[in-house]
Amino acid sequence: MSNCLGKDPVKFKSCPYAGEFEWKSFQPALLENNIKVDKINKLLISGNKKISYMNHFNKENKLTNYCRNKNLTKIVFDKYNIPYPKYELLSNINNNNIKYLNFPLILKPIKGSRGQGMIGDIKDIKNLNERIISINPNNYILQEQKKGKTYRILILNNKIIYVKESLPPFIIGNNKDPIHILIKKLNDQLKLKNKDAYVKRISYNYIREQGYDKNSIPPYNKKIFITNVINLGNGAQDYNYIPISNIHPVNLELFLKVSKIFKLNFCGIDYITNDLTIPYYFSDGNILEVNTKPGFVGILENNPSSFFNALFNK
Image (tube, rainbow, N blue to C red; front, side, top):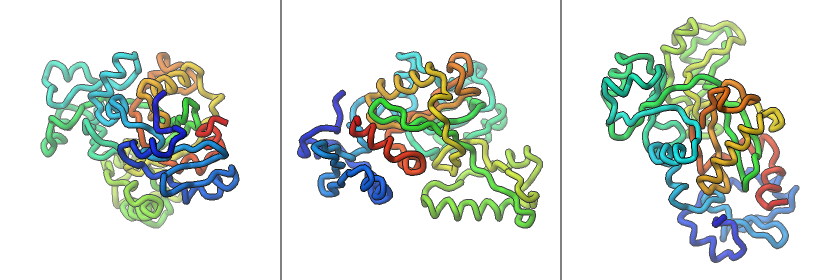
């Protein structure tokens, strides 16, 4: 596979742009695995092997760019029979074709990542008409909002590094503060970790469905979800790591197939399903997104050594 992972440092400079590897956070793991960092040439060095960390270990190509456009991603998914939630271009929606989409629906920008611009939990036509007043229909898709558990699968060099479940952002009651104050406190905590990954879109309708409003004071230890859209850019919270052995082999094959199709050395695949232990075609499993620049936090939390072993093919 052609990529930016080569032997000649000069070649690395031909990669279009650099996606910064968070080497400072990895310093203890780098020392433990005897890996050096060349910050000038943006290289990780282990023995005689030199690997560029430019552009998140990926080389820009046509298929990689497709990942950043949901309509182009659909073309690839259809060609290779990859399951994904049904959708239509918002600009093409009419009274006939909307009948083929099942509510609830979610609006997503055709181009974009980290959940920016997403509008979810659209329950009917009236609700849809209210939501689309202020947006450009040429820039959005209208997609079925699937139910199930959402997982992030991190893949490096055709190896699955980890699978973790994600939850929508939630607050925990303390029997003292109203919900709007608990949300503010949650966002303050999230911004300390990542100034861009906090809860920007709060669904008070979803909060009301759970029996509360923004002024309610939830009881101690009561978990309340403040939106039902799961996206790391909107404060989604990692829940737990899933042992690879607990995942059906057919699903593992699907994840690796997706990374190969898009010629990605390093990617994060978002997947929703009712049950990871059952093949995707029996559990309504769907690929939600292919992220060419996934974050490194999960690697630090989980097992940095497994990441470096996969990176250097140890």
